[in-house]
Length: 96
Image: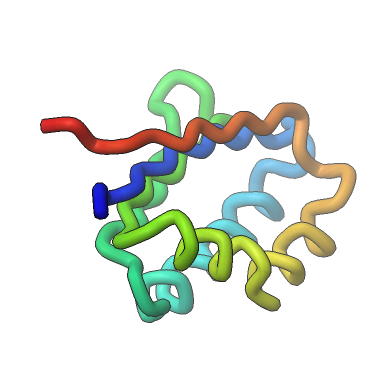
């Protein structure tokens, strides 16, 4: 089965940048410990500090969907409700 790559772009509202960053950072260690997680890296845009990007690689789409339903993601969504300006998620398959 092909490895799954996820690229998630999160843009925080300017006045909520610190809150969003702190909540995103909480996801890192617990997600990295999940079954199927190969890579889970958080990035922050050098020119726009309100723009964050998660670059994720996982063993399968099924395990990623389990991750998406996990309690720590539900907690993140609740904590950042109203603090996100824009969110996009690209689900990709590595080909080389």
